[in-house]
Image (cartoon, rainbow, N blue to C red; front, side, top):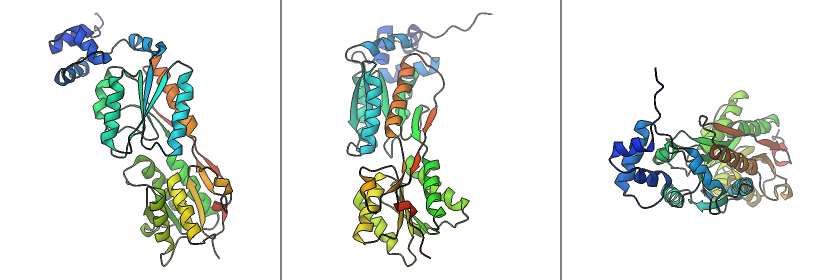
Length: 339
């Protein structure tokens, strides 16, 4: 019995009723093709299970204009800048150029940037998804063999490689640290929207720590705020409660900065604080800030290594890689609960 023949580009062209050159243009982004034709070609690729020869794509890796596209949600956030630096350091040694675009945390701009990168025939695509992103539109590119890796947050509606921090585990460790110092009312200042992967995972870690300690979950101790001022306002609302928290867990670096600002304005040095993600000059604060530190440079480098492996022919199943966090004890998280 003969083995089943693998579909070819000619088979795809015959299925659609176009030339093999047109199929090649669609798969390689080489020349103009009508949108309707492109969609029909990609549908035929999926239907037939056509797998393009990655060697032809990989030959572009050594080209002078070979590039990787990276979409990040906030250019001004130092975390994402460090992630980009980790990617760039890893791919530069392979002669690849990194092109970075800022989605401003909007799905529309994210898709527009991705389309721009694809039109430039990037060798690979890396994306930190926006809060409302949906990535089903990239299924055709995945089928066509384009390496795609998601960082910090996994894809939505698409099975693809991702590299993320151990968000839930790190948050659980940070909150448990506060509880170990006698705190029984621990407030949470986190990101919005609640559907954001990192916020959801860290919030679950917060709840895990409470449950492990036998403490009830109190919804009044949870406030949200994305930027520094919003997080400062959220912190002030928590401090104004009739029965306020004696400790705070900040769900990201901007929330940490907001909490520090609010505590300073309120002249409160008796409220313990642990932040998720480190801050510049954190050890210079009074008290120095205890954090659950991520490793954004390692995240970027790990994602880049995965992209390079895919370009080199690794066709194993999509996988999610967890980058560990670590608790950095400096002082703010060790303030004891009032007796």
